[in-house]
Length: 336
Ligand SMILES: Nc1ncnc2c1ncn2[C@@H]1O[C@H](COP(=O)(O)OP(=O)(O)OP(=O)(O)O)[C@@H](O)[C@H]1O
Ligand SMILES: [Mg+2]
Image 1 (cartoon, rainbow, N blue to C red):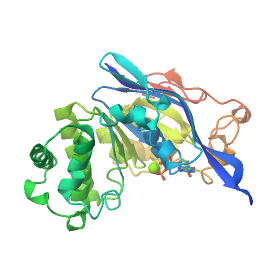
Image 2: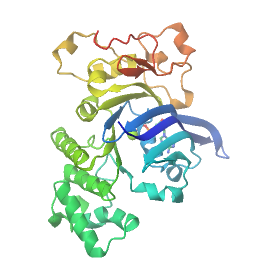
Image 3: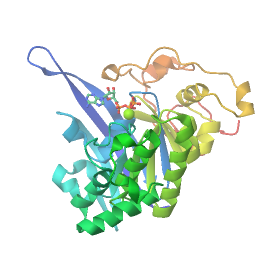
Image 4: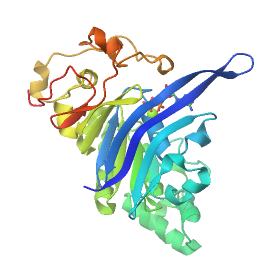
């Protein structure tokens, strides 16, 4: 399979300012040495509790962190492979990033706040076309109608405003906007979390159809493992800025190896009859503050199988069976 994106040792630190002089007094290690590959046409599910850095990873890839937060520090590489060349997106300035913006698009969680209420659907969906392509006004109109039809809306919706639509329809508009620039990679940051459960599957199905039609690569961010399970070829589980487990979606879901993945999964009611016999692992305590990340394995403070050495050694991802796991105390036999 062809790699389209390679994230290598990505670190993102947000400064915390304080005192009367508002000096930097601490930093949030939102992403702390994270690496993964994204293959052409695949969906990588990225899951973890609130605050573990999922959105920050997405924003780093589309290179909007500097514009969003003053003083943010980013290191590592985000290699985008395109037309036989590789470019490190993490090293690009705002203007250098421009040629790549159309190729890597983001869909956001909240379809209510991510669409400008004063713009018509036609303006919202057509806006990226103004920046990225030399379309005439009529070509743009045609492309907008074509895009609306692709996401299950019609040309008649083009003149309306976001408030006239339901949540699911608004997310379709957001998807049409993201697709308008013919992207190769779409980062979907909890695209269905704000929608009714009955609507979630429709939007996920639409995204899968579009992925097939346009050969898109997705990074699909979610809290809810049951959402990513069906759409993900592979799943990466994040904890406090790192990936703790990464492997084939179905196998990570059915037989998680890392104690954190197991805990995350046991929090979700599973229809799998075998799973009901498994002991439920409960997470104790809250997620630690990323300003004061625990030493060693950052999960050791909440881990049911932690040993004394876990507070000293930070385990790297190691291949065990069909996946990579950052815990030396799990066994790699995924079928056990
Ligand atoms: N602009 C910012 N300035 C300072 N800290 C930030 C900023 N953005 C994120 N953080 C912090 O970085 C950490 C990771 O945040 P992020 O939003 O990436 O997590 P997340 O996994 O997407 O969470 P959620 O599931 O709630 O969306 C959190 O501790 C958050 O408070
Ligand atoms: Mg988020």
